[in-house]
Image 1 (spheres, rainbow, N blue to C red):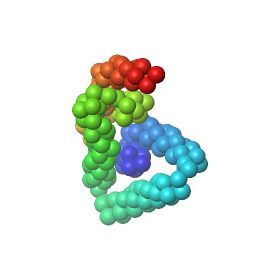
Image 2 (image 1 turned 180 degrees about the vertical axis):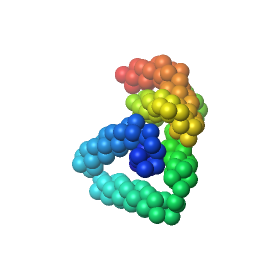
Image 3 (image 1 turned 60 degrees about the vertical axis):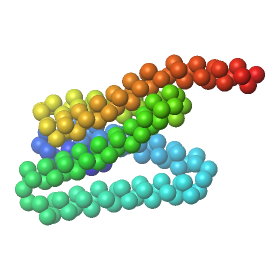
Image 4 (image 1 turned 90 degrees about the vertical axis):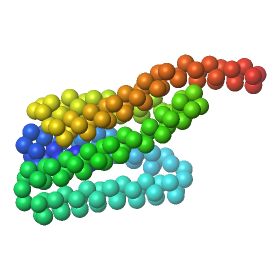
Length: 176
């Protein structure tokens, strides 16, 4: 959601692709979370996700209000918002690396979701391409790093998937 603030015309004069891409992403994620909340059979988990969503929205709104009221220079606003976007973006892409390390250690992709890894990788590629329209170093650096992290996840999945299938097949033969 912070990238939406970055893509606003008052912050980034050529930010429409960033704004649209991230608005679509937030919409898709919100729909996913709403479906998850609807079918979640654990009330505690449901309340936690709703609370996190509310805190995140409040953070983005408070952040935007603070930046727009306390920082006068549009260029400095863009820099501060862009830096915060970079930090949050990288924070979003780093935790799956712990899953990658588990996959390498166990030589099994059972705990890794290919669809999530691929979606994150594809999103990073799209945003990296958008960073060239025109060249935006803040987006390019952020999504360049995220593209590499996403690529690592996809490659690790591709390397260990055949091994995992062999292990699963062996387990099934032993259980029969």
